Image 1 (cartoon, rainbow, N blue to C red):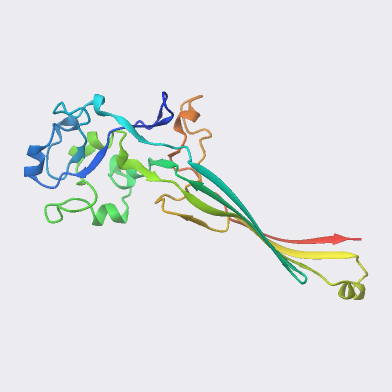
Image 2: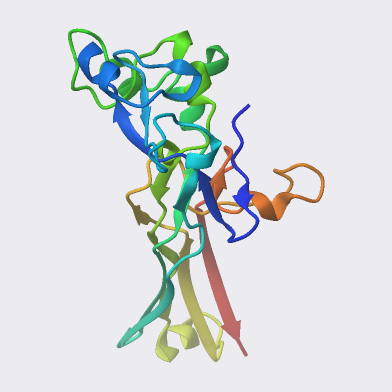
Length: 240
């Protein structure tokens, strides 16, 4: 099983640096000995960081950071005649996500369903420049390693709340009962998210995803948590 915990010394992701699929037998022969001896065309090419001619645990490095460089919040507001508009935008910049889901839908481990990209853009002799390694059971040992293959930019911009309201004029209220104040509004929560992350939701939860009390060690790891719900509301505020 793939190990994705944070490196406890730095609270960063720690693993092998992935350089892409091995393109040909000639390239395979020229590379350092890979994990599990997987020096073949279509295999995984990891960086020999210490230059000793073999990829082993000593070659692991920091491969990502789950902590954002910057968090921003924007409150926008506009009033026009009886209408009011407010929006709260939230921006997380510079955090990485360890996309554990790729372990299943891009490598075929455990007989899982494959993504469209895995079916169309994995290495074959006819497609030596494909993006992904070969779908090959012999690559399973390499796929099991924590590596930068699974690291993605988790930055996102989300509309947390958007509200549009209308204050009913007093002359209208006097005709329907004389209420002093009335405001009708519609509200949307988590209306949209702009992100380059390929997973379902870049906003992750680390609650009850680890082993016992180790949930904090899975910070920034996408283990398939339920995405944030989009909620729509209609309301009426009355004052007398």
